[in-house]
Amino acid sequence: MENQMTVIFDAVTENEAFARNTVAAFCVALDPTVDQINDIKTAVSEAVTNCIVHAYPDKSQKGKITITTTISDNSVHIVISDTGIGIEDVDSAMQPFFTTKPEQERSGMGFTVMESFTDSLTVEQNKPTGTVVSMTKTIRGADWKKKKH
Image 1 (cartoon, rainbow, N blue to C red):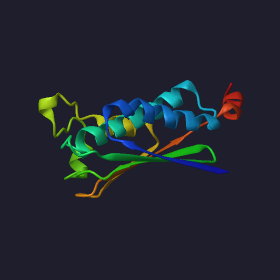
Image 2: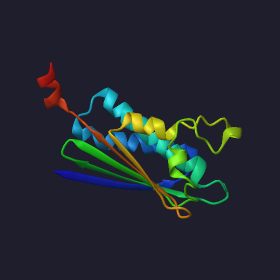
Image 3: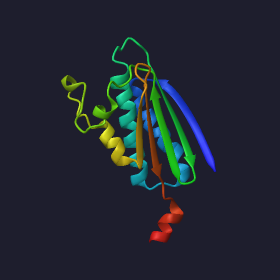
Image 4: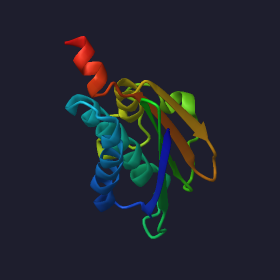
């Protein structure tokens, strides 16, 4: 069985918590563990924060972020996209500690965090029309938990 939702919202800091909680609530249907739901929330938070900070540097421009979340079998697939300035060099951006905003004390660990909390991560460079981050997380629900214990 497959289920899908899409949300579109303004690329402002106030919406980061909304984004992570909305995706987490949608994933409850898979009966995730607390750790699994926290992994999803962390990965979504990092991706949305990247959009807010990097995609729309001209804060007078009101940008949008789109999240499409699909549940299929025991996996959740999350696609987070923006229509901002894009990423100049995806390979460099995905390296730990790489940052284009050192003056803002950014750690450069966003993609590393996303990668470590999901089972797969891809980043598509759409410069100059935005970026698409796709993440997949396999959820082992209550039936799996009972068999393991």
